[in-house]
Length: 137
Image (tube, rainbow, N blue to C red; front, top):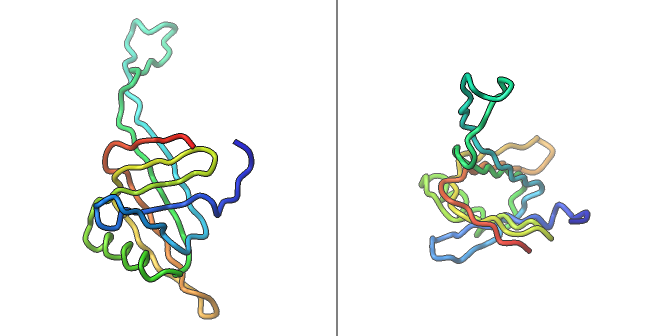
């Protein structure tokens, strides 16, 4: 994968739970990270007393974060509604020339801020809430 514009990484939400995705508008930065917990199976017979991990075990997770400015009333209202309802919705993260990560996420943080001489900005954070799928580009 060659160099890509950051603006081409998209965050989309299924606004109603019906498979109709809309792009969350106004995002200036976005990030997705993946993690997995290790399950340690080391015992006194482990070779050289090196730690051993159980293959394929552990809880996997994905975190998504973004920040931006208000640009689109529909996506702004949708994001606010999802947060205040505590709803788990399907989201998509589209990474150009890589693929699309899709699945259930819960919006765990919604923050607003701004300076007296600037625009109002917002930050969002999402945590995976079930199995995710990856579709290569």
